[in-house]
Image 1 (tube, helix red, strand yellow):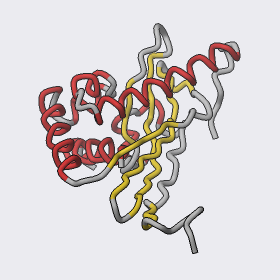
Image 2 (cartoon, rainbow, N blue to C red; image 1 turned 135 degrees about the vertical axis):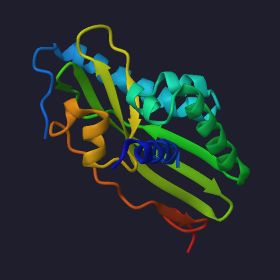
Image 3 (cartoon, rainbow, N blue to C red; image 1 turned 120 degrees about the horizontal axis):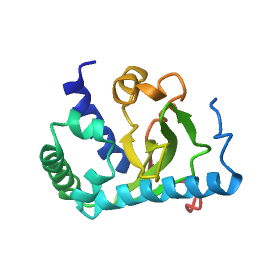
Image 4 (cartoon, one colour; image 1 turned 180 degrees about the vertical axis):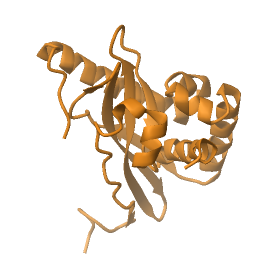
Length: 191
């Protein structure tokens, strides 16, 4: 897949994220726990920044190779602005959550974690739920600064292009189909 087409898919994956590996053996348990909490908090911050239309912060929290693939910071901000306008043009309430990553792995000079995400869109007809993930990446050699790659449409070949150090060291989660629950149906609905 060429990098230019990958940029569009990565950008869409980031937006849609709104709708067998090794633990770090040399880090004490408290440091691992702290890093797991930090990567989850930064992933949440990235998604919240998108919903709040704080696109400069979204860019700050995006893995640099993704920014390059999208044509630079200004083009990414433009794309995010258009995506935000399209999303908010339809009535509905968007909410999201992040789950804690299972582990952080070392991939060369990088630390990598998969942060599960859930996005819910409530409209009068019901609620749509999409489960996805963000890949958190940080430098293993110094102060942790987590940046993210959207995982919705990411494939193994894309991972090799964007983050070659992690190719073969992480397994991309399978993407479940989005679920739509009609209003008045589902758990707790009257018969």
